[in-house]
Image (cartoon, rainbow, N blue to C red; front, side, top):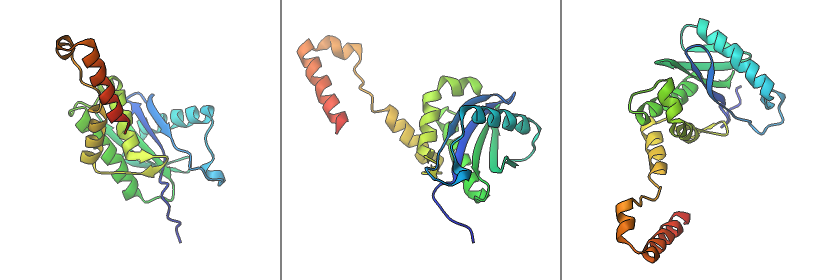
Length: 185
């Protein structure tokens, strides 16, 4: 019998076309079981290097690497990789990965490549945080992920120069204070 749990994702890694890591995020399961022990920075680097080499040779969308199930999705010059527990359901992991990749595609306006991901790193990382939190899949629907990320960006105060020129300093201070108080609630 398989143990079912919330913790499905061990890591999300994005590689470029040469197998070099652009982004990686590892999740610790806060478990005392040895198979979930956190990796040291050297172990992470070795894992990423070996996985990058294996991805260059691999065909398909799934592989087993160091007793981990790795699903990957290639978009333009990037490989999005989701590392999961070896016993995990491949369809569940696939829906997590595809939801994240499609959300990034929506957020970057269908212009997903190495340059645009690095230029919009904040959006990509927010999308990742909205998809997976501490190894637990939160959302797989790309539209919902993208809308949550977009809402976070819309919370910024939009005071432009024209508005500031028309106000006195006291009025601008009061308005900024009100917006700050509203954002803290």
